[in-house]
Length: 313
Image (cartoon, rainbow, N blue to C red):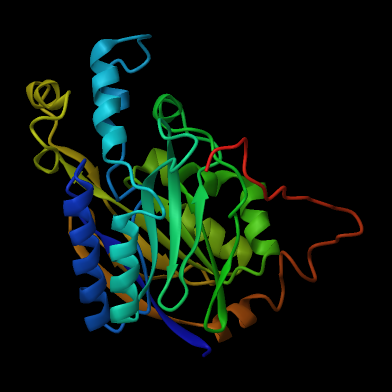
């Protein structure tokens, strides 16, 4: 299969409610199937929501009781890779023949049950969960909420004729992280973001598409105060401060020639897809193949340590 219909889901979550957001994901998979989409990508930690409150609530105060309560609520809604939520999504993916890249707040299942990782889960229609890549370096205030990840599942996975990889938010700015995926044969790159702020993305999908000669999907989330439950610790503070739109989306699919071939405008909720082809990749690599005839392994040797950091599972 030298073609694949790639989809992007720019949606509002039921923030902090993993059961309700799981249903949103399942409904989106069904909608994608109706559009002929074969691989569908969601935004960063769509399940069960990005920790947006950190940069808006004095998160760095040590031993602050309200921050502890907020974290406890957030931890309660974390998901385990072998848990019921991922199992339900895996079942839906198989039933509708739609594979999935899904951002999740992953809670430790054994050791590390008090920790959360920002993870990107890859689900195949037949094989189920292929991997859950944990964000290697949480950014700024995210480090208060998320544990540091590793490269155990910094990998690409086969979908038909293509190998697909993905990175969480600012990981996409890490040259060696991108290189690890290129070296693993990447043809389609999934960039997931909480939202499409210019200060965060800077049109990175085009950079990746051009550098790797890959198809690139940039998936940004939507989030408004209306998505936040009123019993969340900082809801009343955010409302009083006049917060409304938190993340406005702005997702796109970019070709190996850096052309935007599909996009969802900011503030618009929806799912769209585009049929990507291997021929475009092969044409683009005629003059530059970053992991092939332009790699110079006799000069550059880069090693990726793919193992679990510490004993957390």
